[in-house]
Amino acid sequence: MNRRNALKSLAAIGAAAWAGAAHAADAPLRAVRITLPSSGSAGSVWQPLVDKLGLAQEYGLNLEWVSADPGKMQVQLSTGAIDIGVFGAVGLSALIARGSDILLFGPALNNHGRWLVKDDSPYQSPRDLLGKTIATTAETSETYQQAALAAHLSGITLKKDIKVIHGSPTANLALFERGDVDAVITLEPTASRLVARGARQIARVADIWKEATGSTQDPLLVGLSASKSWLDNNRDTAAKVVALFKTVNGHIRKDPALLTSVATEIGFKDSEKAAIDLLPSRLTDSYATTWDSSTFAIIDKQIEVAAELGIIAAKPPGKIYVEV
Image 1 (cartoon, rainbow, N blue to C red):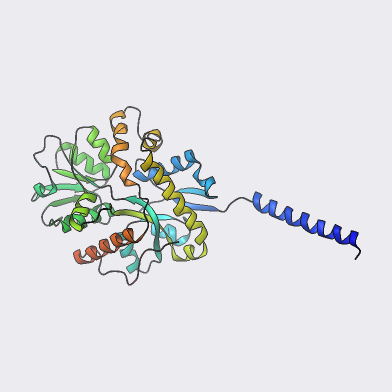
Image 2: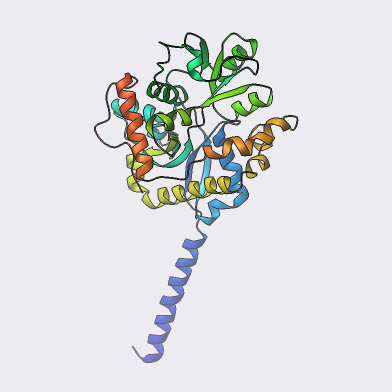
């Protein structure tokens, strides 16, 4: 081959390589199917804020938000209906005991459970409710289970020391507002709605936990979760999703007014101005940004206490969390 033909050949190879690279760059990103928290929940701010801040593009992700039923999320993850969900340490430990390979791999929400009473109630703390009746979510929910763990560490055994009625959030609110129960344990932003209507907060589950354990960090309520097989095959994507969630949650913590900017998008009506105005001061700490040894120590403690209480039969044989 003479010099001229060699140069032509190299040019052709270079053009083909450039075209291939350009085609790869233009190829659509594979969608990551991620849980879409129900409207009106603390996690429902993620989709509008990720869109508003352009974070999916920043991290090179194509996020497909899929409505996921917390009661069916294990099945959705296992069948591939979604790639990424959220689970709490206690509920996930129970699933692992039944053979699930789901693991926690990043931060999502800190515990934002609240104990509320009527404004004219004489009760000032959970201990004042001994022998009384409270309403809260299902016995298998992370909301209730973690409230029970924190209460136990503070010397209160729910169901034994305080009568507990389990029901849907709507049913619990009806019981509370009619005065059929003395208090309610609920999550944000429902708690803010009640406070805006005159309810009084007497405790945060996170504060009870911290006081009992000496921790300076709010306990995790739920973390990002996926099947081990998906994580093994999508390590880089999982790392990008963790970075994105740390970023969006970090933006909220730095600029809490972002919560009011998406209030109507997460189910608030314009007429709920009093509740919307409370969101920055009450919800900001709900958004987790830490995924390290301090978080893992809290998860391990949650599992340990859950086993002591009999909420789970035994501690899982291995760690239920990974770093990606």
